[in-house]
Image (tube, rainbow, N blue to C red; front, side, top):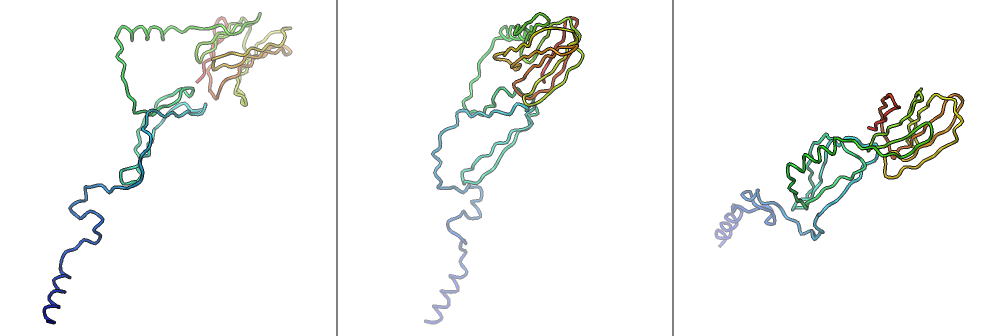
Length: 215
């Protein structure tokens, strides 16, 4: 009887058993673990992100996601593209592609190539015209200096002239140039152009005034 009992124990000890029957065996490594976590979340249609006004280039986008087994991973895409911070960035799974005829594309290219200016302010000495991120100033007076100030972000231009003009102020709607202020000083008058955010600017002197382009 004793010999039978010992033989039975020996056989049981030598049987191959899994350490934990609740996890896959060695031959099932390709099967993902699953989680009973509640995943009844709303489907992604579209989400948006707005960047601050000093953003100019989007370098990369990283998406963090949750796997079937509740582990967290992420994927990243390199971009390095210029952006307009006024417009939000979107992530979406609601994709639709609209077909555009070549003739329509050509019309859009031609329309973009023609820069249209809108008159936004005018006094005896100056006239101001805007087109997107460009401001054209028409004046026969000499521009003697220009510089940038912050809080709020604004461009200052001094024109040489003995003038008796009164203080002038004009707000501009739907433009990156939000306000124009003009004041008289000894030997010159000053033009202050307020902006809707942070920019660098280029100024180009022209025969009939100057052209300011924001970057």
